[in-house]
Image (cartoon, rainbow, N blue to C red; front, side, top):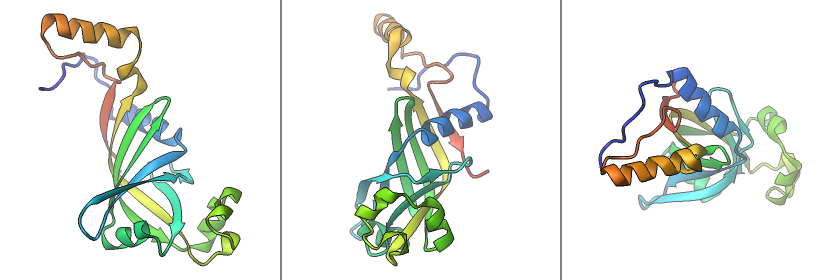
Length: 175
């Protein structure tokens, strides 16, 4: 399968960035991908404590958890999210922080289920994923009359399905 055709009116890099960040910041949960010591990929659903305007993602875990140890060994990670607005995949580099001020700032009472000692629990670390690149797909790509029309048209003509400029985008998040 080749590359889908696009319309002439392409979105600007800033518009793609906004689309990606809107989907990302509208999500409460992400799938954190890490590499195990055996070299396999492991994915775990994680609550997102915060997303900065630049796409930096904050999550929490215990320092002794496999995911924390995997990120210490290999900080390269991917976080994927899904919301009613679409899907996002963010590639980034993770660091673990024990900064008590940051833990206090991000603390949510729900976390007590994982940290019985509360926000002073010494095992708490904040996973900070600094984004490198992200890709998004809007929910509109797979829904509605426009999508149905494009699928039918592609099947009848034998051409690939046309995508709209805001259906998806790849965004450099290093800036």
